[in-house]
Amino acid sequence: MAFVRSYLLVRFKNSVLTQRFSSSMSDKRGLVLGVYSTDDGKDDVKFTKFAQKYNESTAGKLLEQIKICGPIKCGQARIYWDLGTYPAVAVAGLGDASKWDELDEINGAKENVRIAASSGVKALTACKIGRIEVEDLEDAKAAAEGALLANYKFQEFKAKDKQTTLPAVSLAENADGSEQWEQGWILGQAQNWARILMETPANLMTPSIFSENVKSKLACANVDVQVHDEAWAKEKKMNSFLSVTNGTKEAAKFLEITYKGEGSDDKCIALVGKGVTFDSGGISLKPSASMDQMRADMGGAANVAATIFALAQLKAPVFVKGFIPLCENMPSGTATKPGDVVFAMNGKSICVDNTDAEGRLILADALCYASTFNPKFILDIATLTGAIKVALGDCVAGVFSTNNALWNQIHAAGSESGDRVWRMPLFKHYSEQMCDHSGYDLNNLGKGKGGGSCTAAAFLREFVPKDIPWMHVDMAGVMGDCSDQGYTGAKGMTGRPMRTLVEFITKANP
Image (tube, rainbow, N blue to C red; front, side, top):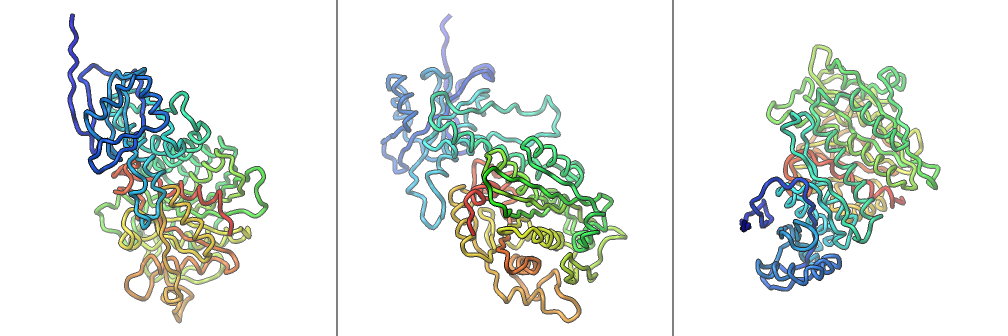
């Protein structure tokens, strides 16, 4: 019986696909290839080295098919069936890296690879291809990052028979850069873990559950994790941290994580991550709309844990200690009241004018404790202020730094990783707004209007000794629902900017 193949030209988001009507193809193999082509309407096509060899194996038929349909733009993918040894081949556009403006401050060649790998994997997944192989796209690390971050879906608590089966993704046989692919794979896995931590509902990601999850995960990477309890925190006089926990029945925890890579320095790098597993605002209650998003107010903690996990997997020759204060911020008859005064570990008094400015209260004591280890430098990361999203939008994290060399290094790291950072000011003006009070040392709110992310950073600065270089990363803008990275998607928590932290720490030299 004659078999007639039918083809349908459809559009998958921003990718053009050629899809064949057929039965389920979950057991089929698919291949992602890369092609450089201009966006100016010309028919010029330039394959990657791997794709060129594959085209030759089809006696040039792949190139013929591409020319019939026209150029494949950056971020698009087109599927061809039964061309060569794979039932399905997704050709993804790598575009022209020179079209990235220098003001975008990003390595366009690497970012285009992530975008192309992502679009190819998504296109094949939409066609129910169960095993996807990705060529190196002439940057295997970036290809792995884009492929793995795209091959993610949070469905942990959905009925098993309703869950979407995700394909197995791997580097194509005979592709270059297997070691670089493995590095990108580790980074993508770690970021996806951070996404899961952030996305999990707060009743299923309490301070205790978070601690158990991190301890179990990092034990597999030979990383030491100590889980300190409230009695320990009280002994350390972490009363600023503990004041946030007054309104909840969930016990607070404080994680101390240690990774010492072979050949590392004796002085550690200190990472501090905000770990509010749910933030209602306390007595200063948040509006109910979108309050569920505050399950991810421990995004800084997730970033620190995932960063150290990635460094350990990569066997990076660095000595890193992570400090994660974990708690809930809830209203009750025992909750901290607006106007209450508490004392931090370094003895400074703080008037808590707004209990919804709680992140800086738990970080204050964590910074004090981190300082006792005399680290090379301290970097804290937190979903600290909505003001940073007002200032910078959803495409970049804000960084405050007391050290120009460290700023330059993390800025360069953001360009390489594709997860950019932007420097914000630490003017004396902001410190005066936080510290110029007659009855106590600091207020957790600034005196003036506006500049909320800047006054929050100025508050934190008061808890780091001046002889220790310090950086504060406000990641609230890139916490979730970001519009700038197709490979992490426009919905859900992102785990950003974890890959930037890894890139920075492996090269940092204050």
